[in-house]
Image (cartoon, rainbow, N blue to C red; front, side, top):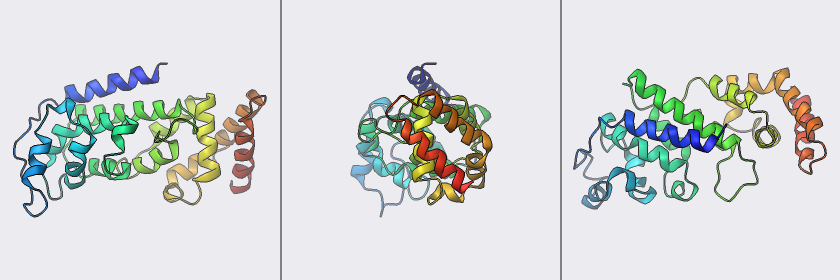
Amino acid sequence: MNELADLHEAIERLYTTFAGYPLRHPVIGCTCCVSRADQERIASKVLRHLDGYDLERFTWKAMSTWGDEDDFKHFLPRILELVSDAQERRDLPYLFVIFGKLGYCKEWTEQEREAVTNYLLALWRWILAGHPEREEDSLLASEYLEATLYGIDDLAPFLNAWRDMCMPSSLRQLAEVISNHAWDSRLAKSSQVQAWLREDATGQMLEEGFYTYMDEAWAVELAQAVEVWEWLS
């Protein structure tokens, strides 16, 4: 499976799905919160050329004091595309803010909901395909999963995908979550995540991973995670 190719395909599907929402310039907003310069910035380029700096303020204010659902859906494909770019993501609001905005939208067509879910899953698989020692500003599974909780009610598809992707990178991501984040973060408040982490199959996934890759220097990460899992489960 080529996770990056799947992610690019999911991004293109977003653009196609939300193409029916045109830019309405100026986007109606609170004049105390949104300046003329803000309005001009989001209309200064075609959608696919807007960068994180251009969209940072709109993303913060979207559907609270700037624009409605239709305006947000116009920019949504580009915002989500920028989330997958480490450098551009630095200029956007926190990931939990972006995903939380998805919950602001009350009206989704089935096609729109599927396109967003497809993208989120494609991005998730791409994250799992990398390990925690990737380049600076890369997304970790722990960070992504915590942010997803703000906008997605059912994480089963994400957890199932994790179980299916039993490769070195996804195992190391799981070990990192169990050892450092699962028990004292927002993940600790998710009964669904906690139940999945405590399943025997999760412990078995780590243990089998350790025996498969025990000759690798990073196998100690899996061994330590198994010990934490056994103690907490």
